[in-house]
Image 1 (cartoon, one colour):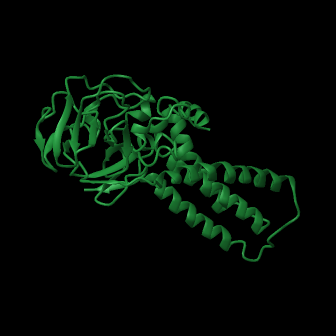
Image 2 (cartoon, helix red, strand yellow):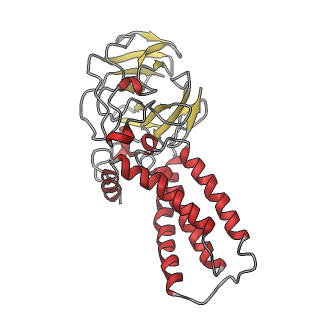
Image 3 (cartoon, rainbow, N blue to C red):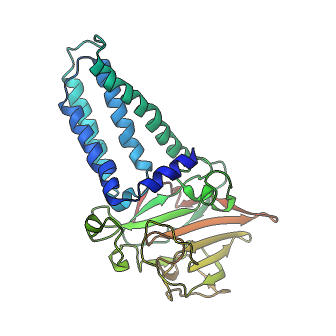
Length: 331
């Protein structure tokens, strides 16, 4: 199944396709739900459930944050709920079942298919919210704005919520170290991670790094500890929807004897600490850039522990909050 998700994700690497699937199509279906006439409550129920599961599934699809913004899905969901209420108010005197027609079958069958498939997508995404390991409490490492989790949660349970666990093998090779790796972007007031509409005209991500809210964002230490390693000097790359395999500027901090936190994709020559330095929680470490295997400027953060034999990824809590996909932190 993860291979199917990878294939679909690759097909969506077009801004125009994204805009149609994530904005135009759900808006059209919502309008259709509101305006269409229904001969039975059962038909309306299937239609509503099919459209509803489709809109919910959009929360788990890739690249949404670069095309329609983070808050648009919530607006679409509210419009859908309003349309559903109005549609059911119009069929209060209609029978629950009606005579089966070709038109009815043409609506019910796609609706059932959507309920089954899109329902599975949503359940898969939500499964990333759950874990058995003991989490590590940390300070949120960013301080000024709205920050959205674009990949986060239990990757072993959900590829849709957090692809990192299966990043290299897509279900064939498990990466325990990255089981709870988390990617975070900064949002503007409209819920976009950049301040330009150029993507509408060139069918690609904006190439100017300065247009991204997260680029040059100050990064602070999420814990107290000792800097275990530092890598700097790698170029900040132009954003692309094709993953680029390049070295990342990063800082790794050792804390609590056998725990480590790694912070990746930092801006070139911005790192303020060196290996061996003692750091305090909240101390400035550097700035967010776009170095390494990254599509847009963002923070990649992960925690792992050394059990004496292996390095094992563990879940993070930011002041008691598990950073799962779609969560937004306001700081």
